[in-house]
Image (cartoon, rainbow, N blue to C red):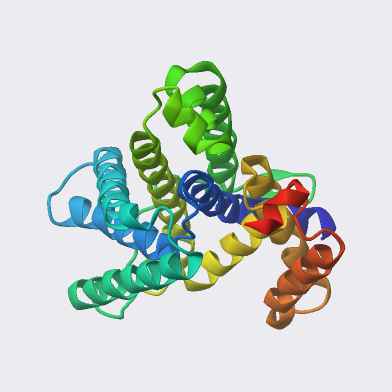
Length: 288
């Protein structure tokens, strides 16, 4: 039972990690905590369902179209919040919460409060190794996280745009003096961040069904993962997401599912009391 709980925890933790990666990526470049991140992921997923059901597009074509829509949402949001680049964090909170309610209301108006079945392209028999069972979708979630993490690492370290991105994150004003456009970096981070959220939403939807409110608790755990790992650390977002996923699943198996959300946030509080900057964060990060 323990190993099964760990495998299930890694799978769900990978979804938290994908959402947290998008949050951290945006925060590193703009210092904006995007409280509408979950709603953007939700409406991107609904966009994929609409392309399949209303436009008759094949699954993978619809997914690409939905992620392009997610990137567009990110670019539009970046333009909205651009004047807040140097504003207090409270201003970011108010604007992104406003976007949260706008997107949620629009989605509710269009799709209502019912649950929608989202296609699962991997409906095959679960894989079994000894007493551990893993579904093809769970395996796909792990593979997607590994591929996206590897791709993001390669982009940041081996491309001109990625190196410019890292330079802007380290010191935005020094990067501007070197000719690096902070606006372009912010646009890229918002687009990629929203695409990562959209991928998480598309992977979550077949497990929970698609609904307007499906991302609420997931976003809270993604924020917890980002803070636990270190709010400016991309590897920390992955570590935080996996940690929360594994801890809550083990607790759910051995104690009870009713309190597994409680233990996840209790573990977060306990770790932050010992290490306020997060697992992979730096002490100066907590001054932001």
